[in-house]
Length: 237
Image (cartoon, rainbow, N blue to C red):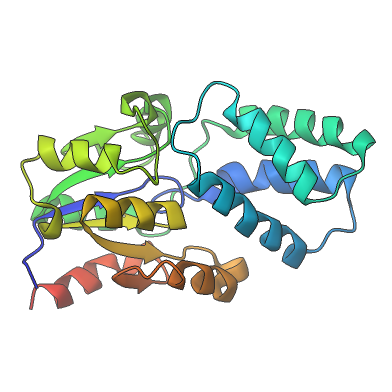
């Protein structure tokens, strides 16, 4: 295997909890209009939402309201519930949008990779979110390159952001590992020609998420971001 020189990371779901920042508003907005819904039903809908997301690479101003409406349809919400669900989700999402919830030991992972590799964050999060996150992570400032939503012409699974990072850092795709937590991260990495590592980071439904990620055939799969340094050490033997 080619020696790895570059480590690229997604942000939400890898370094910072996606469930806490985005899943929490979704769950509580949904519970307001459909209190009896089960975790399994929510996960099933989210899997279908991911498939919708994978088919969309250019997300405009009204993308979020549109995807929320599609979620309402997938959930078979009654017409009188669609508007309250959408409004509640957008309000809670806005309140929670810039909050950062670091994954356990994520800063130690940043310390390890920034010391030993060229590094980049390639994320759908906005630059304002990453700037806010620098207050929570001591070693985020040591990352060589940040490619955020503001820099993207096309979003994942389009490899635009990864290709930009590879070119900027003068790396080859096969000497680069992209670490993400969702199928569109794996798809983007494959299309960019990088090695891919899927990270679960979701104890509440670890088995289900693991099965979902396996369908997209990442080169590596780990349960938590804290396991990344150990994986990298094994890869370099």
